[in-house]
Image (cartoon, rainbow, N blue to C red; front, side, top):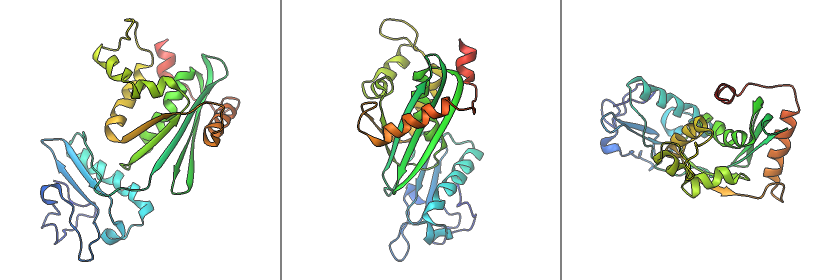
Length: 245
């Protein structure tokens, strides 16, 4: 069992800060306290974000950093985080993602915009040698990998390759068939699909296809940012792609 990050016992939760049966207690005013319960045998970590200010004086914006501490504490005692549970819903998140290449394969980039509570956060990265599909995938994967919260996230992409792989079960079938497609040809970009799978398990994700170069301003902005990025001078190498060619 993991104590709170400040390691101070909470009289409402017992001498070690345990959360009985994984339930989050309420304080005298009925506000939920942030808490963490870990079951090493089941490999489950349950987090609640409730009312951080009531707990150790953190603002709601600081909850994400606190969650990272919690996860690190869980990893210290060798818990495999297979399931997470939010006791209280947080703000709805929307992630718009797009990838682009100067030629396919060739220089490429992805750009993503995370929308939360009226704030937009941009994620942009350019690669020397890559493909368009890899940029579409990384535009979803890398922002999600940077998150330390557990929320419902609506993902919007103009890539049917990405959206249908999740929504129509392509990805599940590829795994069952040992990374072979229905025509028995090998699946491409296995390294990236393997990075996406734990994110699908970790978050409550909804994938929605939107038409590229249409009337969605966020998709168009992502495309503009990605094109500007691969036309710039700040590149990294897509190591998995280059080494796997």
